Length: 135
Image (cartoon, rainbow, N blue to C red):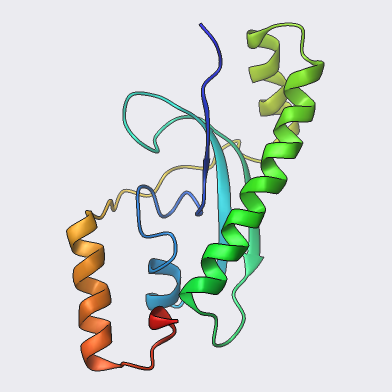
């Protein structure tokens, strides 16, 4: 077996979907991306590395998408360099653990459904049509 990895476009506190909505609605101080091992349950595998950026005042949903996708691409390059140098899958996994900052980081417990995210967006649209979520 190989080493299955995922580049999740959010911090571990936001497993699953909603990476572009939740940080804006909940006024998070940071957004980020997470490199983790894929296991049976979505977004629950070992976290190898997390990259973060501060959220500027007035940040929009489109800004969040652009920034998190850029962080994912940076982590793809970073992880590919590490994996290329490893002689085996086991050693690649260990090298990612050593090089990354994921030790001790845990996934958040709140997992939202697509319907829940859609409802949050619709409610925001009704209450505040100029919300950064609409941008």
